[in-house]
Image 1 (cartoon, rainbow, N blue to C red):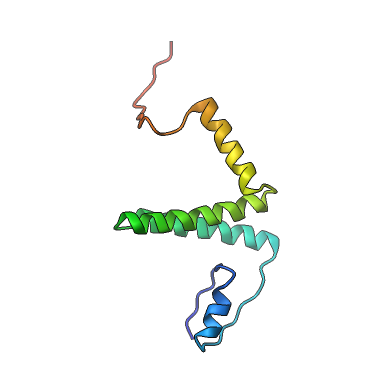
Image 2 (cartoon, rainbow, N blue to C red; image 1 turned 90 degrees about the vertical axis):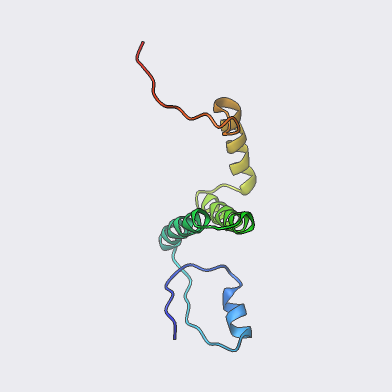
Length: 108
């Protein structure tokens, strides 16, 4: 039996069952869940960094977005609330569209 010990998407147990395999799983407590989501975010970010094609990159970004939505829920926010905060920050501090690379500043 392969050992995973990681957070997986909700339908993975059903998919495993439908393939004729057996599995062992458990439901995480809230703190464990948050910790595992943070691990999953790192995993998905690394997979994005290692993506070889635009399509692979988009798939990994979608996975990362799913994890971010789950983390937002852990902190009591909806995806819409998260988006509103993102928009407010973009309005106040800008986005990354202009590709500005800050090299240094000097005190006045």
